[in-house]
Every structure is written in structure tokens, then in C-alpha cells.
Image (cartoon, rainbow, N blue to C red):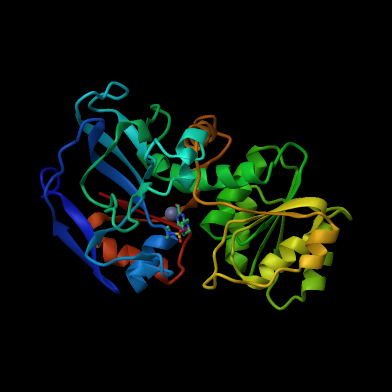
Length: 350
Ligand code: 572
Ligand code: ZN
């Protein structure tokens, strides 16, 4: 076992992942086959594992292979592939859009209604030894970027997209709400984009310590604070100013409210985090009278090259987020560790 089998992490039913040998897939035209190397565990993988669904739209009706933050080494080229060679180390962008719809044509391919996104039903994920993927959504890694870093380009791409949607530029004062993996990558990208003041909030001091390593210039534990108290503390941390932009990564109602109250008139709030409810209360008067833009994000488009450049240039040290590594045989332990909220980013080696 190891290099010829295709050990795969298959979600069978709620709370049950089986490690099973599955057929080694062969690349279709335009695809490459890869020997997978690193796969990060994302909150959505854990959610599917626990509930077999995310909301009412994404339901897992039959066994599905998990994993979408991934990298590997090219082992075979499908017909017509010219951008990669056997032996190349690549990061995999997990969403392959249709290329023909109006969103794809406009470049906003993250909004393609027919996108095939790894580990999102009905598409299997990449937490397995061999996987095939569209070659044009595989990015060759330079020697200076490791395969582990390649896998983490995925959450980093989410942050590149969020910071673009927030229009973060040099000199900005930024509030990042939530210091989980997505909050931390947003702090990193905001810092790399030249933001001079970055305040991170959370309710866990350990996470806030990590935020300081990821570019946060100030951190604040908002547990037990009133909205007004937190707004005031953030204003003091920002030298008496409100934030220019806020990136909300927790999805928690009080945090969304805090973000809206903490940005200046004409500021922008990007909602990245998703809570359990589709509807939350928004302070509409505050938002409207101060012309605050509230923007959503859905994954990312055209962000992998920038994410790779941030790592290659050393502007972002993404590997510092990795707190645990497990071999694929110990996938269940890796998921249980993630579920317990231990560590930040947990990576499985295939
Ligand atoms: O890495 C991309 C990613 N996107 C997430 C969550 C985790 N990882 N999003 C939140 C959940 N949605 S979804 O529409 N869905 C499960 C497809 O609810 C996608 C974006
Ligand atoms: Zn994800």
C-alpha cells in the first residue's frame, strides 16, 4: 500500500469516514492525474462529516470523498495538456467552472451555476492518493514553494478575494472579526496589501495570540463586551479613528453588528463568515445613513496566481498556520482534532 493503491477518505454517512481503496482515475482530455501530497481540512469538510449537508442546497445523498484544499505531483497527462509536465508539483484550484455561461465569460467564474467544486455534492473531493483535475486549474509550484504551502493556497485565495472585495489598499485601517483560519489568512493578506492597522477580534485568547503572528497590530477579546464597549475599544486602538474596512469572518450576529458599527461612514464590510442562519439582523439605519457597503463573497475567482505570488515572495508565511499533520490513514483522528477546535490548520499527508 502507498504508491499504487488509491486510499481515499470517503464520507459514508453522518459522523462516519471510511478509508477505502478506490479505482485510480485516468485523466480525461484536458486533465492531469496527480499523486496527492497535502490536503488541508476545511470547516465545510467537517460540516459535511457531521451533518451530511450544508443548508438545504448541498446535501450528500451517497458516499463522497472529502477534501478540497490540496496539492500533488503530476503523474499523467490527459490528451491535449500542454501547460504541465509529469513530475510538476501543483496546487489545485478546486472549482472548475463551465467556461460558457455569462459569469464565466465575465471572469466571475466563482458564480458559475455549473461549477464542479471538489467535495461539494455531487463532486468527489481530493483527499485520496490519486486524483484527476482540469490542468488549467492546476498551478505549477516553483521549487521555493512546498506542496504543503500549495494546498494552503486555497484558504489564502479566499482571503485574496475578500481583501479585493473590500478594496484593501496601502494605509488602510482594517478590522478582521474572527481569528479562525479564515480570519487569520485575511489578516495576513490585509497586511501584505499594505494595511497599516489591523485589529483582530475573537473570543479565544490563544487564537488572538496567533493573530498577532499573522499581521494583526492589535487584538481584542470581545467575549462579555457590549457592542458599544467593543466599538469604543477598537476606535481607541485605531488612534481615535474608525476602520476603513471590516472583514467579518465569524458569521456571528453580534460580530456582524460590531463590524458595521466599527467602520467609518463610506466604509466597507465584507461578510465572509457564515453562521447557521440564512437571515440575521442588520443595523440598517446605521448602514444607510453612513453609506456603508456590505458585500458578500463566494469562494474566489482569479485569485490563485496572487495567492501563489504572496507565498513565493515571502509576503505571506502561510505554513505557520499548520499546527497538526496526520497521514491519510489517520484521517478520522485529524477530523476529530479539527472538530475539537484544537490547533488552527490541520493538514493530511496522502
Ligand atoms: O474553500 C472554499 C470554501 N467555501 C466555503 C466554505 C468552505 N470553504 N463557503 C461557505 C459555504 N458555501 S456553500 O454555498 N456551499 C457548501 C457550497 O454553503 C460555499 C462557500
Ligand atoms: Zn474550504
